[in-house]
Image 1 (tube, rainbow, N blue to C red):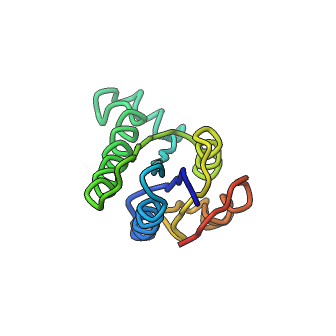
Image 2: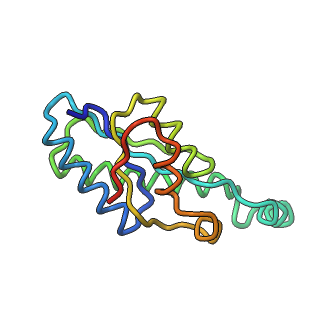
Length: 147
């Protein structure tokens, strides 16, 4: 049975479905199972960086704002898991390219299974180059369940 499950969570409907599936799997696996929730945020673009230099007080450091938002999203997911009866739940935020960051986190936390939504809040880049879930299934060394 799976002992360490990673669910990437961006707050989308697809991510919520994946989280619910991961919660069910963790509860089925028993008291030794661990649920890791990961919210990935992307660094702002050079255009945004140049705007922040022109107006340094508005809106502030965009990376900090994005990290703060990602933390709120991850904490919301963690609360959902705890409320649903999961006991060993950890939430993380990380910057970077979404698919590769998910895979690196899975390796770092010795994940047995990644549960990911088929569609999230992807960008135009993801639409043109392929979905995050598709990339993760190709890169991950552990099984991936696409919900």
